[in-house]
Structure formats: structure tokens, C-alpha cells
Image (tube, rainbow, N blue to C red; front, side, top):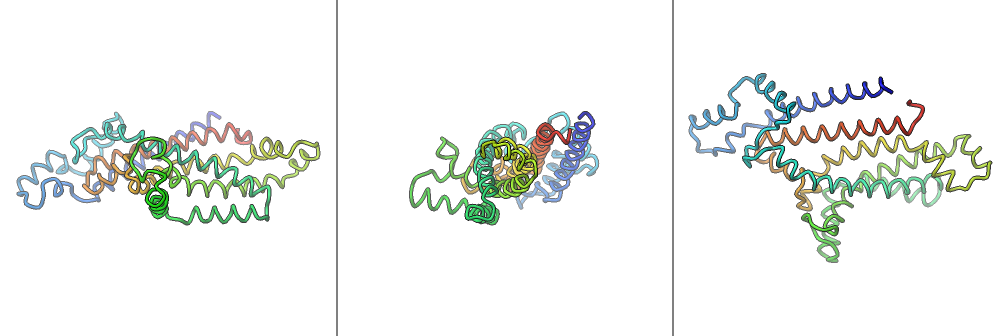
Length: 303
């Protein structure tokens, strides 16, 4: 287990280094922010002075070294657009994104796992075909389009739910459903395939021959052995939703990291974009590290 954890931590460090380097390079390739800040009528002296103030006149290697050193000590710089600490703005927006992410993944697991179990226990039947069709539909519908359709039906036509903006629990319903659709479909399909495979194992027939109740066979014996792949995919989907939250937050005017990232990209505020990418990368690798450790706890074969 010590070697297993050490290997995972090493992979986390390598992944973070590559993510930080990619964020730096992409931020520099996105364009010169000086033109956006000063406008088209700035004089060459003004442009040179601002580039020197921002450190953009220095060699790229020196900028990269300063960027890595500042990031390691938790200094993510200052926004060129808002003139505020990037880390402070990210921490202000993070609770909204985590609220949306948590609600979406909770719905995805609560709907996807039972749907996959139901399809696996009725393999080849009507429930199996209906669950498979729903899973394919959930993975095929674009998130942006789904969000607009939900707003048009439930907010505009029926007037049952708010169309967006953060607020009470009712404001969270439509964004959470939109976020949950794709991971729910993925989790349902994987649960169905792994459960169907486990239910065909000889030890399941032996357990049933002992006269145990059907629900106990499914939820105690079969689901426990089918859960590690589902746990891994759920963790991966949680990390993926960090990037998918951009479209959902835009549709619903949700004040999270996604909307902040869009504003930073439009302004070419590369320090803020880099900071958001850094926080997202750290969150992603930590989620996957926790999933790997839980995987080892759930699956004794790995230990």
C-alpha cells in the first residue's frame, strides 16, 4: 500500500507540473493583453511601459520560472481586468461551482446507479432497453442545448422554476439536472455492464443457492464487487464536470468559476486564466487521488 500510494503521489506531481506548464504556454499564446487594456489608440511608449510593468518584456524562460515559483508558494497573481487577487476571486466563486458540481453528481449517482442495477437484473427485457436508450440519449444531448430547453419549458412556459441566477434551492434544480445528465448516463451504462458481468459469476449462483434474499444478493454481494469501476468513473466525471460547468453557468448566469473563466478569456486576462486552470488541475488530480485510494479500500485484490 505504501508503494501504491507513493506511485499515485508521484503521478499527481507529474500531472500538476504538466498542467501548470500547459496553462502558462496557452496563456501566452492566447494573445497580447496590452492591446485590450490600453485600447487601439495607445502610443508605443505606453505599450512598452505597460509591458514592462506586467513583466511581458522579459524572456519567456524568466517569466516561466517566476510563474512556477509564485504558484508553489500560493501566489496566483493579480487580475489584469479586475485589479484584484486571482486567488481571492477564485475562492469567492468556488462555493457556487462546488454547489452546482455536488448537486449534479449527487443526482447522477442517485439516478444512474439504480438505473444500471435495474437494467442489469432485467437483462434483455423492457427495462434494460429503456435504460440503455436513456443512457445513450443522455450522452448524446449537448449540455448547452439541454439547458436552454429546460429554461424554455420549466421557467418560461410553465413558470415552475427560476431561469437562473444563484439563490435558493429552486434556483439550483435546473442547473443541477443539466449538469447531471451526461454523468448519469455514463454511470448507468457502466453500472449495467459491470453488474451484468458480476451477476453471471459462479459465486453469485452459489450465494443464491444458499437461499439468500434477492435484494441481499444484489446489493451486498454483487454491487460491492461491481462498484470499483463505477467509483473510478464517478470520480473522473466529477473532474470533467469542472470544465463542463462553463456552459451550464453561462446558460443559467451562475456566478461560479465557469463564468469567471469566460470573462477572463474574453479580456485575455492570462493571469486569471492561469490561476483558474491551476486550481482546476489541482482539484482534478486530488479528486482522482481520493478515488484511487478509495478503490484500494473497496477492492481487496488491489491491496
